Length: 453
Image (tube, rainbow, N blue to C red; front, top):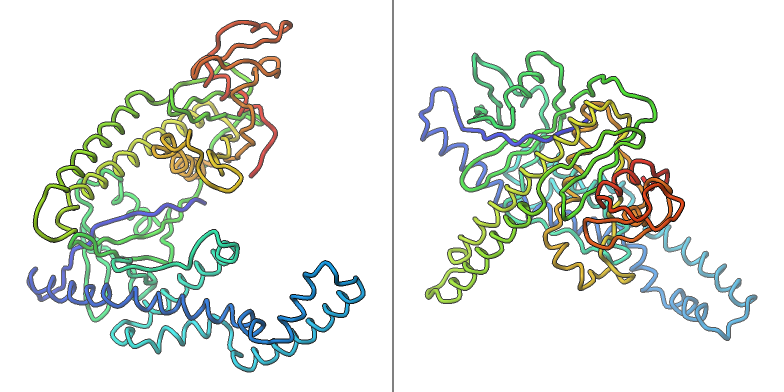
């Protein structure tokens, strides 16, 4: 099964009340949530961090433990002395753990729930929302704990405007009434799902969840207040459709600059170029020029109000983001459709983790411009979930030398230009012949056995 998230506008529609009265009642409630919910989340994160690091703080406060640790790092300390120091540190550690357990005997989840419910900002928030918020914050805190310890990321800060989490269960299940779908909310509030032009086919997805039961709504859902509108964010489990595949047939997907994507199979003539790289980059350049023009005009504006001055650039940024998402969805849909038509068993792509970064994790100067336009990580994720919906597996391979190796003989060659590859192996049938570099890389990716995940 694959999971997809849908964003659907919802409109207050309470029986017995006019449209204005429904809006006043509903929006007043959500503005209260919007004002307080992020404060509760931030308070919970800080308290979880303190609880998780309580033992470390106690070690630093213990003079004997710190002295043992300092002696242990000295080069003059003998091996026998190090063993004695380690034993002493273990005894101190056991004592500190015993004291910590006495100070904080409850499980972190129990502590988290109590911290949320006793918060002064949580007085007017229903317990279902608080419980779901606690679960989300606690899970995210645990998922990022290692990165925080390594110093790779800071503690999460929640901001005003965060979606309101809740659980779609019997009390708040989506119900069908004639041609309309409604979400019953707290205190007899009712919200109507507005599908609009429905370019994302949301009505059909909800129909399959409520009427035909082919899909399943996940319990976790959210409501977002954005630009004075309400949106329902739901996650849907979609079962994978049964497709006929040829065992061992693999499609390689090469993501590049000249062509957004080039696909080819490991054993067969099937190959295709997808998208237009020049048109894609020209459109991004148009957005960049408009950004610079708007930023220059903002510097000459008088008066006060940063929000008012930056409104135009934020609007343009949102348009660019929507355009990129649309392009990625279009390209990923075409790739998965070809994979289904060619009956491939697996799609392979290059692992782009750490691309363009040096050993210190900083972006190299020659990659800064490219990574500023890099949207291929999102494209890979779109390919993943679309492939899962049709039952096709996705794997990632080591990207080393895939574009510098001949797909016929397997020897290194020359990539003389960005879009041209030439094999230098005298014994190869493709010797000294100009090949499409993206096609060559796609075939190498399809043939690769060096799977990293």
